[in-house]
Length: 233
Image (cartoon, rainbow, N blue to C red; front, side, top):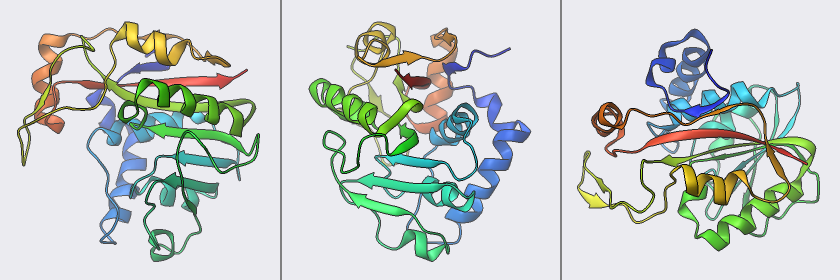
């Protein structure tokens, strides 16, 4: 049995549960000219939904949404959705006939009241913040999640967080200039963040000799992703 908090596994993309989510997201992105579904998020979104265990009508936040189709998908499933980004996409929800509360804002100063959400999704966003800003964002997400609510967080993961990495996919190459995590950095900045506890087992085992070429073909980078579920305490 897979650990609930784990490394991206491309084989999971073909499981019935993942396929159901991905097929619908592909239909949605194919019917507008605004949204996107990044390759690594094809695993991250279904993983996060599986781990969130949302109740019908749950209040959720997509923290750092960009123009992702994910908030639209969540709203279509009947959840009450807010989505925050520095420049949120205008009108994407109306294109699909749903309602998403898009808000312009900063992860370090969330414009929501305390305990506003049952769950927060922060999907491949935290690595683009400096370490001080990461701490502020985790503190703010802690504030806006209700007691015992979940933070579903994914981020870029590599064997050495101090390595120099280059993107080598379509339109490349170029150097990776944002942060990424190895086991020690993940522990220091995410798993030991104040006010959170990891829910369930964490498995960080990676065969890097196999994984690096596979991931380069998949999304142009040698790193993979890791998903962790944090509970507000």
